[in-house]
Length: 107
Image (cartoon, rainbow, N blue to C red; front, side, top):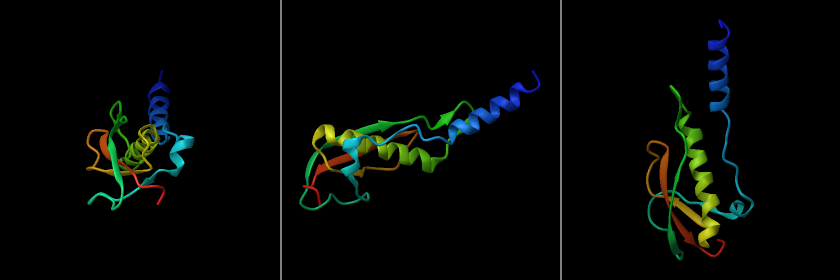
């Protein structure tokens, strides 16, 4: 019993450091452009809304890791709407983020 709490804490900390979202094969060619003006010469294909857990129990996950996972999820969704470029529409909030998806012809 006296080892249960330290083991639980160690497990939460270990799991929170893992990246759960893997880049799908078709998403490797999807590029990410900085927020701001729409990329020139690109056709907008729609928007992608993605979300991940930003906390585990009482532990807040690393925000850089959350941001990375959100971007990976958006890249995974892009090929499904024939997009090859994504652009964040704002900062992540509560583990959620929206991206614009564009077809730029492989620039």
